[in-house]
Length: 148
Image (tube, rainbow, N blue to C red; front, side, top):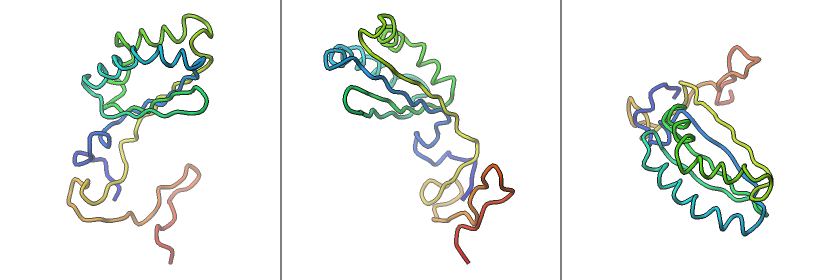
């Protein structure tokens, strides 16, 4: 079912701002040095208003990435200004390639509408599907979900 009411969804499903980023560290020594500041930063992030959920991923050989969800863009940007995040980003970037050799950050906003079913439906707990897919940018309406 298409909806704009995610009040019954888990906290991460109610988030409207998402952060995706990764840093390629110089080597094992940089990753070990990072650890102390990183744990403080995560502890601070979890206590902040608007934090919803995060996970960390690894790509060989020295890349660590984060996907994090916040209630809204202001909550995400407030975290970005926090003490431990600022300290970490300065450590990563202020010394050329001493600690890290590259990285990226992407910020995403959720559209107001989305999909829900089952226990996360605000208007009931029945499982249901949408009759048509969401149209692509070049379409006026999407094709039916079930083929005739």
